[in-house]
Image 1 (cartoon, rainbow, N blue to C red):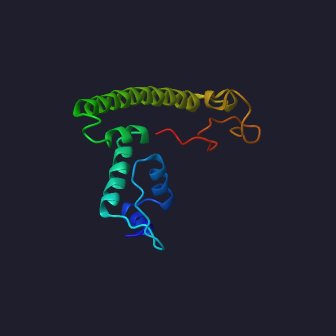
Image 2: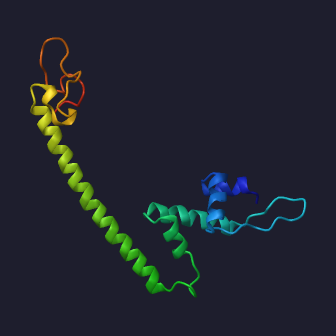
Image 3: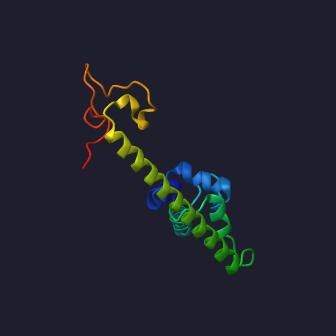
Length: 148
């Protein structure tokens, strides 16, 4: 099959296929004289594996390691790489949880402010939260969503 069909079946762009080829993640098939390169179903499967591994959080460099033949990278090395990824993702989730808690706290403070110029989410500067001469919380002025 040609490169455009591979791209369609794998759900990627032709540019992505060429990028993977430059990175050494997929092979470049031989080009017969006066003809187009022909790709096998194995290339489609390989691209799908790359996309799946990316969805698991692996970088292209890590995917290159995962893809090496067993003679070059053994099962223990692959398992160690996966364990490192799990640790990295757990750390990221903990940090994201802290970030969410911090933002929730800031939002609660902002919703309690009567003067939006003092709202911590606005950096304490003048803002459009105070139409006319009246003072109103950010959420009433439509800058933030209404508290539930």
